[in-house]
Image (cartoon, rainbow, N blue to C red; front, top):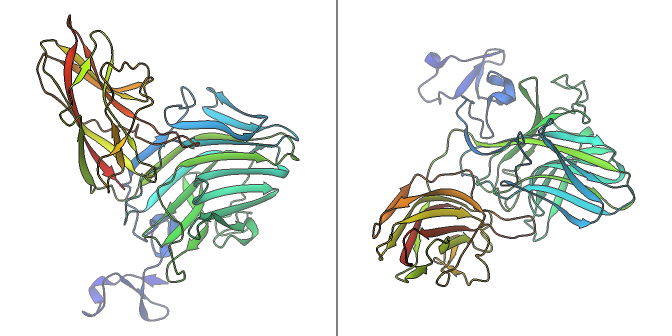
Length: 430
């Protein structure tokens, strides 16, 4: 039995120690000393006090969330993704005896803030149907190079830590029988016998200062039960994975010999425990004195930004935009996510260490479609400022590497064309 006697601590003993009344000495706290046991502390061992900040979430109650998730047949044939509104989910399937890979992945790679534990909840059914020889199913926080995920390969369930530290991805696969906290077979500390054919909430939390602890578990009946932890401090000669900025991913693969099989993707949430600080680099990009002619009664592109190659894991918040017309016409401004017509342009880097690159289009570049994330009206020759444009919809890329773009646009409302200058203030989290 251990009890805390803060008032009895000698002056030279840290008050974060605990007095073990059986062994008669002071020792450091462990996870099990907190209410809720291991689930009562975050990845850094700090007591959870219900102050996580949401940084990404997705639920499929209206559609399959196409603004936030890419869903494609990566290779082969015979794969499909079927959305069900009643089930608020998408079922990823492969056909019998047909080689094919189906992947559903968030466009955004969720930024990790050093010193904060990243807490991830992912719901789904790993073994919805089929499986066995020739079939691999995965769900977790990962891409082709790095990450943490739950896997069924053949008939073997495992948790996997993927790392590209060596220059190519290497999977550390821990099978269920070797999980070091709870094998989840009914006879472990939780008493839970996990059924992979039923809906489950996969829980992942980790610290990443290049090194640190990774824990994986399930939330059952409102309680988190961790079944395995990877300990990556004081035992490695490098970081345990190359980046903590990763997407949510569901995946199913048939090597061509397996039976028809499926996995169901439901909902997900990524949180930063202990809040999140706006400790980042502010930047600004503009047409740099270049006047852009905007055609009356058309949506004209003025300035576009996207992530640079090699920076797809960065996160960008738009802080405000500025638009100035020198003609006598009123106008509407719009900030548009992935419009059509902004193609074939040359991009330049903002500066060497920025994650952003930009393109200034030719005069009268008309665009259409896309998703308008902000907009408004302004009077002629007025410099508008649109503030507080923080949005969950952020720059990312598709599974195949196609980048998102955000375009500042102008729609002149008068009887003649307008001459326009534009700029964007942003904050980048690397």
